[in-house]
Image (cartoon, rainbow, N blue to C red; front, side, top):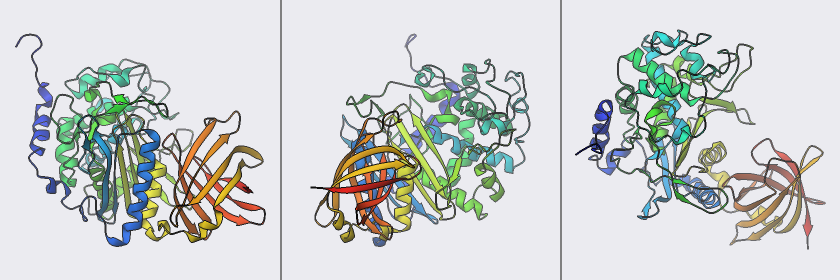
Length: 501
């Protein structure tokens, strides 16, 4: 066939066979063990399902994202999953729960499970130098360990320039390390936090050295298969992968959606190179909850190790463990999560351990709206469906036009004209928010009411903006008009409103 003949890279052939074999699995087998069938939910969850649908559609429209998929797991099963929009715009293929998306850096917690397995088996010492497992990785000015690399504390650099757009195929994990292996460390390991996907590529070589197996084979056989993640695989550029979403790129909020540029992710499987579905990601999260109870693939102590934030040598907590970020909600609930961004895909995986709840989202757009805020709102809706019931008679008292001001302490952060109308017994409306000069936000946020419901603290409005982001406004009538709180991306701010004619 000459110099342009097509061939599979030698060491990737086995994985390609696995991907093709998965194609013969009929649709029902992908949902085994999922509890309620994909796209359905028990009747008492109906308000939560309706709320999630409104949120996702608002985010999709606001950001210009072609397709979004979301799944929710509670206890030991998936209680709901759904697809929204298009997996392929040109062929008019709709997103379904079976659609596979590029999950970007959500690949890191997937890889962290492999690290955890090797720690449990005594085959990986996190505090040994990486050269114990990758002997030919060049030594640096300072030694570095797998624990430091996994916590982004090792000083290994992140992508540079257009490396994120790499289209070169790499035949082996080791070959991919040549991109950065001869670069100096950014700082002495342990002294600072600096996010690095390349560090996780090094960890995939550590997994190979500790296990004696090819990285992708180890992930397939030891992580994905035992959990039942039948739709998770490497994003092989040359393989026929059933249900793979077409990736899209563009600018937000300006128009201009187009097919994403071609990339070959073979240089970064561990750090950002897997395909998956939200259902599979929820299965992955639920497996960690089972492991905490001693019934999963990992030891309980190992799950806690992966989730626990690391600290710099100076004692500063980083908020990042081994493949997982963590934090607390304002009401003190622990969450662990990871987001993912790639060319033609975004994703998010959220676990609320005490509530035994997992939410996963994925899109086929480079700047898709998958993130902590929508995932948390959806989780809360499924934990308390009554709180998002559509009827909101108390909120009807706030109908009309309001001149509102948002303040951070004594500083005016934004102002806007909020218009609320009665949409068949449900509060609807919109508001342009003009942000104060010198703030990071755009000059004008055009928001639309997605949801309204009555609470003890007032009428809660969930709004989406033209960037595909969510905001919350809680208002209650006062003698002077209305007052409450506004929450965008950070801590809540106070808001006061006066009625307009």
